[in-house]
Image (tube, rainbow, N blue to C red):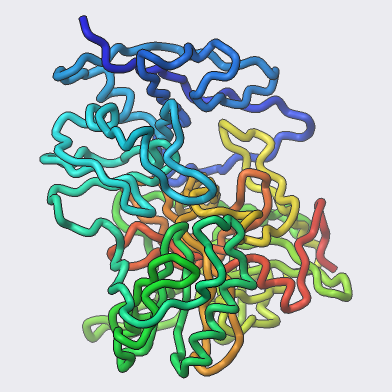
Length: 500
């Protein structure tokens, strides 16, 4: 029997040991979380690779609390030219697929050793081509496998398509045909594409009398949105040695993310538990919030609707006054903040300030309510995740392809990957820049709509951003960088706090 490679299977990670009071888990597990893949890692090792049990193995080790290397629970030998049902079953339940090498280097996608995709081509039986088309690893297949798919393989987000020439990226845009910009800055060798550089690029465009709406770094290329009347021949084709792609404002219109609903879609269950059961209740990020009821006319009949979003993080202003962040578009002009819904809940606070161009509002909760910047507990994190700061949300603190997590009443606990970071200019003629990130969340059967306002965390528990919306007909989600709060004089709070 000729073995092409071995598949080492790991069961879902064990809960981390508790060092304090275990955080409460959700009373209702949202249906998208129920359908998400278990925390299983399938490590693919070629027959030439060192065994996993040896020190220095190329396969990424898990991080057990006892400090010992975790050993595989099973092994599958894959033969050349044969369909292996055990391999198909392993892939169908694995959120993360590790390789004996990484497809990421310094925040950029890279080819397998010697450009050899032959091992990867055996993962899915109808694969006829594989491309690395940043930010995705693309399997071109005759039959697309059913979702959910692995979140990442070799560290890259995964996409499938059935045609050889289809661009799998969500409207990358057209390559510029003008001059080069910032030739003295070779970003081919720089991993610190930071906010200063992004703002420098934006100012160069303003100097060219081109009012761009946004610019994002995708770890290998730039994507920029320009006015419709700008000739593609006039915009730079390379910036700091990397290609620049352009979309017009009409090709990528700004979304209106507010969604009016009076009930969830059929078959979808959300966590609409009432957690404010007492005047001194302990609340946390990731509980359901709602607006006041508004009456609309639908097909000639009146209908009561309201907006549902997610609670954000606990912050304080420079005077030490406490607030929480919420999504601006999720509330009516009266500023009332309901939990969980206006019909079965109560007003827990009121919006006191909206931060222009960010979709972040600041809400003051009722006196006596307590709040802690800690997520609900999960199987993998029974203590929850304590939010310990705000990330700068750019290299070297955040790189493209870094892992992220989110826990809210609509998606439940879910994982994602950073695919780009950049700035949006709310007023095309101003120099006000608002930092944002595009994120790819795991491929479940449900969208993550209404997660608006939810904190997005990095692996260290720092708040990278606050969820804004999922782009239409796209796999990508937009978050506004939490670092924006500091520009308005707000800082994240630690520990349990009581509103007065």
